[in-house]
Length: 129
Image 1 (tube, rainbow, N blue to C red):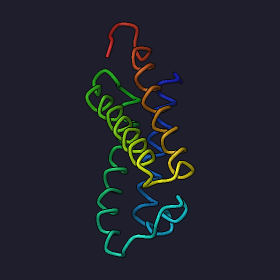
Image 2 (cartoon, rainbow, N blue to C red; image 1 turned 90 degrees about the vertical axis):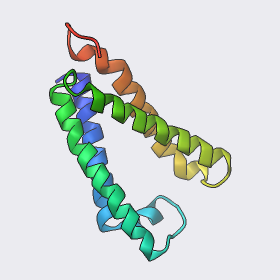
Image 3 (cartoon, rainbow, N blue to C red; image 1 turned 180 degrees about the horizontal axis):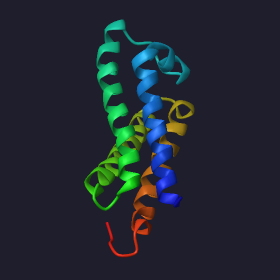
């Protein structure tokens, strides 16, 4: 297994796990993150967010199998991680979220984004994506 495929699988599992947490125990998961409790009706948009985590998580397994054919989705995940990192930086620097609550997600976003970007060319000897 290549590093690229391994990273895709790790990201896929992480996304599916996030989806399950936001769908089945959203308030508990928010508490685990050290974030403020939200109103119960916030669980509805969190469930919609969970659906996207599930689909992109499964999509990471598809990307791992054929990154050239699925390069649009590969670059989509790179963009998602970049946006996640930018949001983390913004909300941390503005004082809305404490660094101890945002550090792990921002580190993960950085590793996932850079890893996918840097390893994407190693997926095949004949094509660059």
